[in-house]
Amino acid sequence: MQLIRRLLLFTILFGALFSRPALAAEPLPPLPGPPLGERWFGITMGDERVGFARTAIRAAAEGYEVSAAGSSKMVVLGFAREASGRETYLVNRDLSLHSFAVEQTIDGKQTRLTGEVTARGVRVTVESAAGRRAKTLKARGKVYPPPLLNLYPLIRGGREGRKQRLQIFDPEEVRLKEVTITSLGRETLPGGVETVHLRNDLYPFVDNDIWVDLAGNTVRESVRDGLIVTSAEDAAAARKFIVEAAIAKRELILAFSLVRTDRPIARPAELQRLTLELAGLPEALPLVSRGGQKTVRLAGGSVLFTTERPPAPAQQSPAAADMPGEGRDPEPGGSLAADEAELLAQKNEIAGEEKEPVRLVEKLARWVAANVAESAADDLPPLETLRARKGNCQSRVRLYAALARAAAIPTRIVVGLVYQAGKGFVYHSWAESRLGEWLAVDPSLGQVPADATHITLADGESREALADSVGRVTAKVIEETY
Image (cartoon, rainbow, N blue to C red; front, side, top):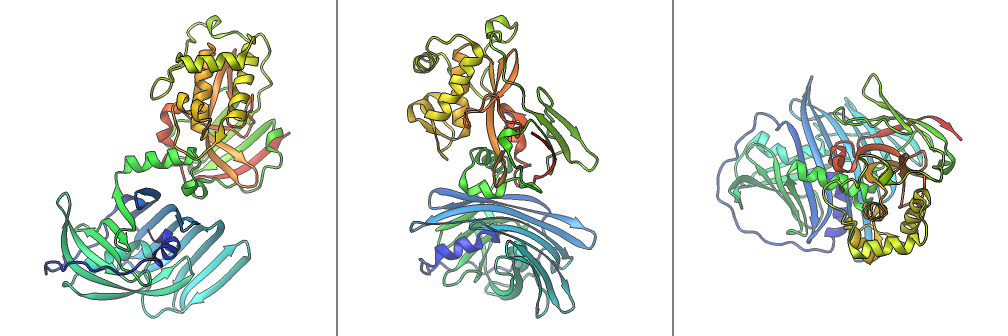
C-alpha cells in the first residue's frame, strides 16, 4: 500500500496533527510468520473512492514472495496526482529483503526497477525514458520491503509504547529510508475486530495510523486523521470494481490496466489481420473463438489471438424475423427495455425510412458515436444515457444495443481489449449484431465493422471473470497484415 505514497505526501502537507486517546496497556502477541494469501483494499478520500491496492504473500524456497499492486488518482486544490504500480519482493525468512522488481507509473512517467541485496548494499537498476542506470544504495544493517512494514511489530512482539526503527527500500525515490513504528496497544474496532494500533512516521508532518488484526492482516490505515483511508475489502467486491473501472476507462485505474505491447501497431484502423500473443490471462478464463477471431492457448500459459476484419456486410442481410431462434437476446444482467417509448421514438428518428438491416446498424452505431459524448461517469441504463447524451463505453454500447433490438436486430454485448494508438490495448466494451453472421460493431468509435484490434475476451454477462487479468496482461505483436 506504499504505492500511493507520493500522492499522499502531496495531500497531507495541507493538514495538521490530531491527538488521540490513550489505549489499554496490553502486550503485543508475537507472530511466527506473515499471513499467507491475498488481501484487497479500497482507498478513499472523503466520500470518494480514489484507488485500490492488492497484496499477496506466499511461501518461497528461502523465505517468502510478496507482491503488491495498486492504483490511485487524487485531486487536491485543483491539482491531479496519479500513481500505479506492481511490486514483487523476495524476502528471507526474517522478512529482510533479498531481491525485487518494481514497475510504476507516477504522473505519467514510467519506471522499472530491479535489484538485490549484496554485501555492499542494495544494488538497483533503474530503467525509464531517460535511459538505464545502476547504483548501489549503502545500507546499515538489514533492509525491508514497504509492503511488510505493518507486520514487523507483531513479528517482533513487544509492549505498548515500544518504538522500533526499520530501514526500508523506497521505490518511488530509489533510496533507503528509516521509519519508526510505535506500538500503541490493542484496540477493538467496530464489529468486534481485535487489532493492534500502530503509528509510523512514513509521511512527514502527520501521523500514519494503522490497525492490524492479531493474525497480521492490515484492517485499516488512516492518514491525517481519516483524510485518506485504506480499508480491507471483500475480494469479490474489489474485483468487480476493478474490471468495471477498467472497462469504463476511469482515470484512477487507466495506467494500471493498460496492456502495453512490445512494439506499436502502425495503422490500427487499416489492419486486415492481427496476430497477438497475450500473457497473464487467467487459466480459467474461457477463450472466445468465433467469427473473425481464433484463439490458441500456448505452452507456458500465454494465448495466441488471431483476428481478421470482416468485409462490410452485404445489403439485404436477413432481419431478425427471418432467422429462426434469433429473437431479441436479453441484456446480460437485466433488460435493456428496448420497447420503452423514448427509445423506440429515437430509433425511428435515426432510421427514418431505412429498412435494410446493414444500413440500420451503420446509422444507429454512428449516431451513438456522434451524439453521445465520452464520459468517465459510471455506466447508465440506455434511457438515462439517451437523455444525458454522454456516457462511457458501457453506457454507449448499452444504448446502441437497445436501439438495435428495437429495430429487431439481435444484438449482444462483449468485452475485451482494443488498441489505442500510442499507448497500447485498453479494456473496452462493444457489441455484436446479427446480420446473417454476428458482426462486431463499436458504437463508441463509430466502427461498422469494428477494426481488427478488437480482442474479445468475454461476453457481457461474464465480465467479472476478467478481474484477475487487469494489471497483469502483457502483449506481443506477432504479425500485422494491412
